[in-house]
Image 1 (cartoon, one colour):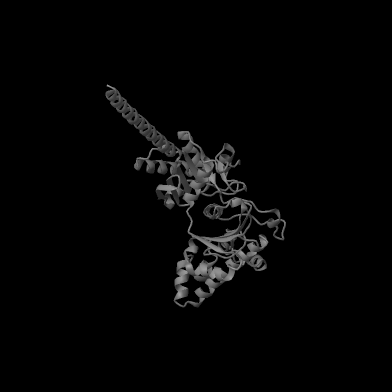
Image 2: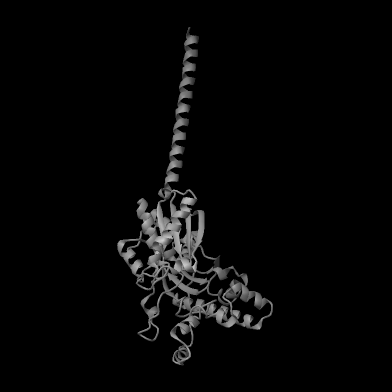
Length: 396
């Protein structure tokens, strides 16, 4: 009898043990499911809008993973129908929403919409919520009419339509210059901050992340080489000095003149041979390699130089010398204490270009190369940093 009781107790223990195992297993499954759901909820799905003069680039990201992108091109006839940049708003919005519908993409699944920042008042770098005040200045174009003004406007409209936030990130008007960097020698002509802020900030923060250091603790020189060239000194998380990449100073580029002899320029202006528009065209658009070699394609310059074209060889060497001098200048801004020189932009794909810059400037600091630029990703990353709590949205 005792033996049977003992058997029953053992069987009961086994049943209890099995039951506990099942309960534990079920609880683990629930925890895993909850974790997966939370991770899924934490993913930030963003629509990125980057309007240009003849196209609108859009991308949809889940965190930093690109789901799809599209470049929607606009003919001269289409754009020509509208008297102002702002008048294009509904036209561009419709082609964006039509594309999303054609891909069966549910706009309500988005967490945020991010637009390329436009010609606002000078502001510090960062991610800005598209507030009513910011929206009003984009509509007015307080520093000029440019297609990028539509980025924040479209982001706000689409975001509001589904009840989600809208942002802009590091527009070209980012201005963090230290006061003494603004002096030009002519009080009426202060130096201004016009540069590739979005890409410069993005690669600087990428380098900081990859090295495990706060961006704010680093002293960097960032060299962006594309259609324009900008070389900036980054200190304590700010671009404290930078060469104007549009029409101010610094190295010449594929289509811009950079710094030019001011006396000779004044004489040219008053020679009676040129209109204001023609002079400006020599500085922006038809300057640089365009003026010397008739091309704005660095690949073509390199091809001609490699084939023995002496003009191409000399012009390319002059370009590299000027960029290296800009790097040296920014090293002085940082008192010679430079953690890294970061080279980026389309021209950074040229290994020979990077090698030549290293030969002249690597004694200052080591080089890191991030060729090209990914504006859509940079815009998405700006929103992610805010939504994840890594950064606070800036106030305009």
